[in-house]
Image (cartoon, rainbow, N blue to C red):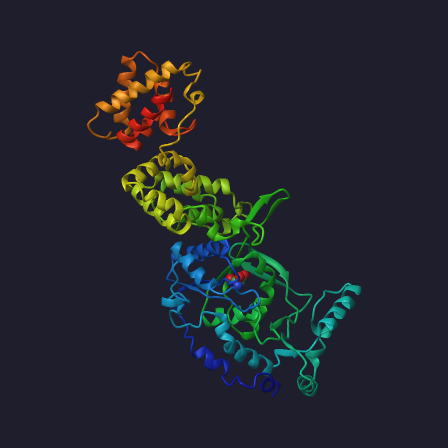
Length: 532
Ligand code: GLU
């Protein structure tokens, strides 16, 4: 009867709801990620989704997305849509979830967004109240604080439980009176488990850990009528038939409670895997990647700095199992999912987000990627993150830009380094000083030598009727002419390189000539010849 006063509008029964969520094939592995749309997508979400995919990959499987937006104070509009778009870029394609056209739900276990499931939760909460397994609690903040102080003074565990929860024992009349007085209330679980008993927690990553049972009457429904994560995940993972819950370590401490909740419902709990949080090194040692402090916690940070999706996946794979790196060397063009990941080998020490490592992984992938494919990705990156550079490039033939990228791909670690390493290809006015053209070590001690060297280059270039086919093509003719002139390679190539790039550090002369093509090379060298 109390339940009807608490939830007068709820008429369905748990059986009505359960019948709408038919059991899946028991052999199917069902995993999900369940991010809360609170702003940017944390890199852990990608990591977490990868673990889901890995565990499901070799099985008959379903992978779905659920948006956990019950904390409406922290919710950011459109964040959920952004998450879907970002995860798609990682080829983390969901079978189910709000992933259809216009982010509509796909498949039958909908709605996949918790805020649309409020009435479902209420049906179950109402039923628990009816069965005396949950109860309304009208304790005020002040009363809760007082209880804690008393417990602390007696060195007892703190919280609302058993004899410290007066509303657990309230009569119907007392509850009706409190409701009449419009007192605010929450719904609490009536824990049956014991403070002094231990329970074995099984975890796919941590194996077996013995812990205390839950004994707290935790809140399952807030005063706003919205359930807490603990309760919502219980209902959702049951109704959606999730077989494996993979989530970060922060939730491990709640596992006894979650097991009690499943036990109370007489439902089989899913298998759990709690992975270590991603950490970074700072002055005080290792600490969790923080949404507030660390730009690299945000997936978009990696996009903006132009790390390839392939690199991020490989980088995270290596964090999951450190043996991945060696395997990758032998298996360059396959998906990370083909590696035989071992969950029990997920190593705490390796959950380190080490940007130097990522730079290295990215540079290897860039270097090994076919230039045409890389160029396509590069242009897409510029469209999103650097339209100025894109418009600069658009004044030049595509073939020219590709040659530059093809050359730089062996030198840069990520694409935001493209500009600083290539600007001299896009400006003809970068003229070197006299000092730059001279180089004692290379035995270029006067401008006459410079003059001679540049003229050798001009003669070669002017004698050509077509562009060079390859860098070797450039090299052969230069070597021949340098020997003829009785000079040293460096004596000619240093000034030529400086004249072409206007820089002390740049690709070497023969590469520059190959990339710049003959006409541009002649113009740049002649410009320098005029003022020395
Ligand atoms: N919404 C929860 C979080 O963001 C998800 C935990 C889970 O995967 O169950 O931490």
